[in-house]
Length: 344
Image (cartoon, rainbow, N blue to C red; front, side, top):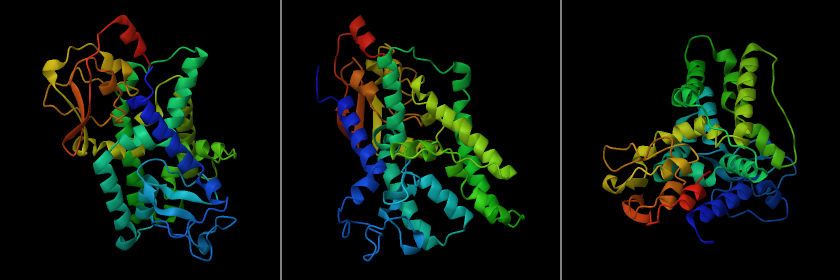
C-alpha cells in the first residue's frame, strides 16, 4: 500500500484545514500571540477578548471570507476567518455596503476562485470533509451505500442554481424601492438561516444548538429550508456528498470551474470507456461522454482528481495548473481487483 498517494495527500490537507478552520478559537485562547500576522483585524489592546464583542473590534485572524464554509457560527470568540463568502455577499447587498467595504473581499474571492475553483470544495471545505468522513464510516460499519436516483439527479443542477439565485434575489429586493426594506434583518441572514454549517460546526466546538425560529412567516420559511438542508447533509452517511451537490457556495464556485487555472484535461483517443472515472467520483461525474474539446472542467467537479489517480490509461487524464501538467494518469492493468478497489 502506497503512503504518498494523491488521495492521502488530499486527506491530509482536509484534516489540516478542518482543524485550522474549526478549532482556531481553541488555538488562539491558549496564549498564542496573533499580533503581526497578515490581515490581522484584532485591535492591539484586545488581542484575545474573552467573548466576541463586535464593538471591541473583530476577533478574526484573517479579516476576510473564504469561498467555502468558514462559518461565523464556529465559535463566539476567535475564528480564522470572519465567515463564508456567501454570508458576505448576502449581507453586503442587503445592507447596501459602500464599495470600499466589499470590493477588496470580492477581488480576493475572484482571485481564489479563478485559481482553484471547486478545488476549495474538494480539498479545503470542512463540511465536505465531514461529509466524506461520514460516508467512510458508513462503509467501515458495513451499511449499504445508497445511490441518488437518476430522476432526482437530473433536477439537482436547476435546484442548485435556483437556490443560489433565490438568495441573491431576496438580497436585491430589499434595496429596491418596492417596500421591502422592513425585511432587511430577515433577508440579511437567508444564507446563514438555511445553511447546515451553523448547526454542524458548533457541534465540533462542543455546542449543540438547533437555532430555528418560527416567529414570523419569513423566519418560518427559512427554518423549514434550513431543516431540510440539515437532513440532506445528515444523509451523507448513506449518500456521497449530497449537500455539496446543492451548496450555494459550491454553485457560485462552479460558475468559474470552466475558466479556472487549475484544470483537468482528457485525451479522448486514449479513453476506453471503462467507467472507472464515474465509479470513483464522489459527485457521480464521468469523463466518458466528453466528446468536445479536451477540457472536462464541469461545474459539478470538486477537483479531488480521484478519476485521474485511478484512470488505468497512460496520460489519458491530466491535471494542469497555469497550463503546466502537474499530475497525470498512469497505466494500470484493468482487472477485477482494480475495478473492485475503486468502488466508493
